[in-house]
Length: 365
Image 1 (tube, rainbow, N blue to C red):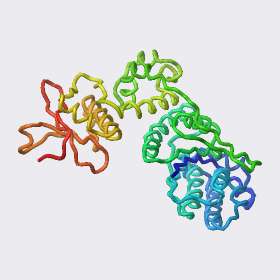
Image 2: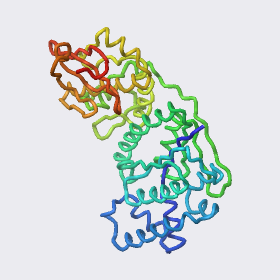
Image 3: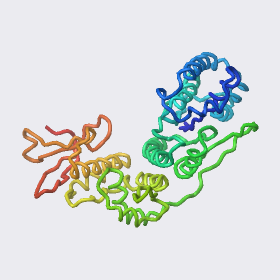
Image 4: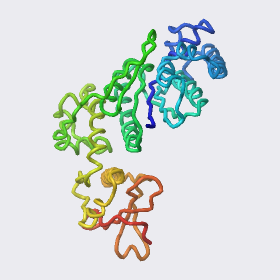
C-alpha cells in the first residue's frame, strides 16, 4: 500500500553537523532557533549558510550509519525503509517558519528527492516555542491544513503515517494526539536504539452529539462570522482556551472539529447558519447524486456563501455572481461548488432577501 508520511522536523541534522564539522555547538544554534533570517547575527548566518551548502553537497554520499547519526528524522526513515525507499510514497515535511527550520527541511527534502521520492515542505507559521499564544494558534492552523490533506490521501488509498522522531517536544506531543485521530500509526526511534517504536491509532470516539448541537459555533468560528464570547465561554474547557478575557477554539477543539467536519460534510447538505440560504427540492435531489468527496466540497462552498452573505467576501473559489443571457431567464446567480476544473455550477435565485439554491448542473449558457 502507498504511504503518506508526515515527518516533523527539528534541528538535529544541523546541530549534529555543525558540532562535528565546524565546532559550532547546539547552544549557539538554539539561540537562533526562533528567528527569521534577517534577525540572525550576520557572522553566524554566513557560517551556517556555508555549512548547509556543504552538507547538501555531501549528504547524498553518506553511508546508512552516517545518515542515522546525523539526523533524527532520517534515522527513523532509513530504519523504516531499511534504506530501500519506495518511490510511490508521499512525504510531507512539517517545519517552523524560521530560517533554521526551513533550512533543515530543505536538507531533508534534498536527500529524499535524490531517492526519487515525492516530497513537499509544509511551513507552520508561528510554530515557535517563545510564545505560548502564537504556538497554540499555529497548532490550530496546522490542523486546518493537515486534516483535509490527510483525508484526501486516505480516501485515495494511502496508509497514513506520522514520523515523530525529530521535531520539537511541544509540537510532537500534540501531533501524537492528532495521530490518534488521523494516522494509521506513528513511529519513533530512540537515539541509541536500532528498532522503531510503532504506535497504532488509538480508538478515540468523537462525541458527535456535542458537535451536532454546537456545529454552527464551530462553522461560524472557522469562516470568520461574528461570535459572542458567551457562546465560546459556555463550551467545555476541553475545546476552548482563554487568553486574558478572550476565548477561542483550542488546538484540541480544532482537531476534533475538523475530524467531525470531514465526516459529516460528506453526508447531507449542512443546514444553513443564517436563514438567508434556502435549499430547493431539486437541489437536495442533485446533492444526493454526488459522491462523498463532492458533497464535502459543496458543503464547504455553502460555508463560503455564508461568509459572502455576512460580509460580502466573494472568494475566487466561490465566485458567486449574477448571470446574463438566456440562462438568466431561469436563474439569477451561480457559484462554483467543487474544487479544481470541474465545470458544474450551483444555480440560484435571489428572492425576498434570500438565496435559493435551485440546481446543480453543468455549465449552462
